[in-house]
Length: 284
Image 1 (cartoon, one colour):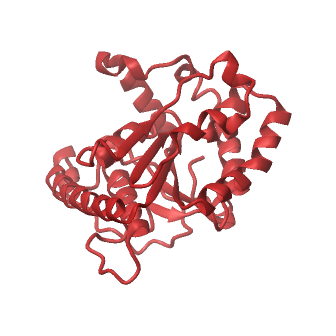
Image 2 (image 1 turned 180 degrees about the horizontal axis):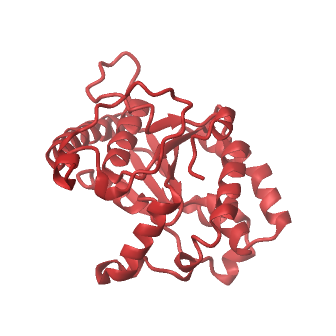
Image 3 (image 1 turned 60 degrees about the horizontal axis):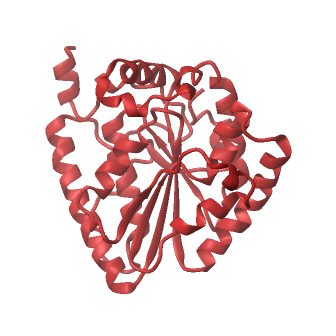
């Protein structure tokens, strides 16, 4: 089948596969939804996001989205689509750089606290305090004791945020090794993506197994009833974006209000559980 015909043959969400079955990696140039279908649904979802934000502003709500995942998992592109038509006054994207010498000696969560949402705001973290559960231990940027303290403290910290009235949504974008390799190579060739390149990119594949182990430990140790993780299979960027936004809309939906957007495909966006790792639902 030609590339064009394959792209135009859109897959129906929620296929017959068992939810515990492993899904092979799908390269981005084998997208399973056509560009026209993607654009149409994205527009509809973005309209629903605007409506959701208007309700949030009216009711004085506070929403915090955390997007985590390996390098080149699609966090930037997903955030771009979420915020594209939202009110810039009530929407903020936070992507903190390397901590300063002063920040390195402060309480670990301290540098994140000033960026938390106030009433009527939506804040999106493009990577968050979960750096201490992923890139920092893998790359040797924190000690074992610092990592252990973080894993012990973060459920309590997030419970405090939720108890303060913040609606906390945590997403992990999961991609396969072949797809990450392809995207990082494309990033290295594209001069328009030069700002995305970092020394960590060069060793991302080398440390694949270490990142996988850190991911599994992070998800298992920080998934709580108060602050659960949602996994998004992100080898197909289009489907990942659509299903993540569907999930966001479902979680922001007021009880008793009729749903406008479709439910996320459970093969693509699903709640983490202890069985997720054993069932092979994460990239290896």
